[in-house]
Length: 341
Image (cartoon, rainbow, N blue to C red; front, top):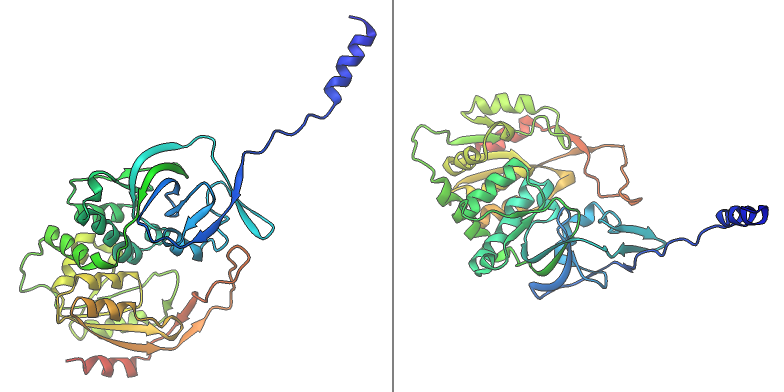
């Protein structure tokens, strides 16, 4: 090979190559959605999100994930570019012809969200006859989620479990959960079939000892005082889902601090008395509203909380204060409790 040819070949290798074209992308935007069926959609199972080829993310499917990713940049194939979030349209993805999308980001991480939001959505789809043509789709489930799902569906139908970060749905259905909370309750109670037991505990206290957030500093003292009043102290993590449901259904008086385990009030009988101990940094009505809906009687005792000075940013944004410790004034609370008839 001549010197000139060798030199030309070497120079060719030194010429920078043009970058490969980037796959097409679209800006993500949150839009309202009233139609419960969407065709040709992308679905990110770990977030619950459903969106189309134009980047329109349906608000009901992403609502609970916004506390984690307010900019949507944590979604698969998404990244922040200036003031917008871009989504790269996948070249290849698992194709699923039809599916019912009922599981939210909140339901993946919260017992209360799964029980009070996601499962009623699933029951709404079942009542509409949709599950026969649109099987439920989920990310990989935790054991307690699988147990509740079996109690809801009776084990007759298993969800399509998707480990991929994003899939393509020919047709996605996501019914509203609100009308079916009572139906979900009846489905689960019917399958648990709570047996009669006159000796079962009638007073239970739902403990949060060991919780990573909202630590009640004198909870051990509270538990001792309540045990002296005939309460069974229940640590939910030590009980199966079925046994928790039975405990709440048999109870005549339920006491507990605000927390996801209080979602089990759903299984109380009408007339059950519920006393919620609420730190003033987390005032809310969801436990009282839940009690009212099933015919229970709820009262709330509010105690001051001490905020944690550590600030945690989420995608550069400051979230609402959620880290705190608190101490219950037992001299005030116990007389309050003793007045509950």
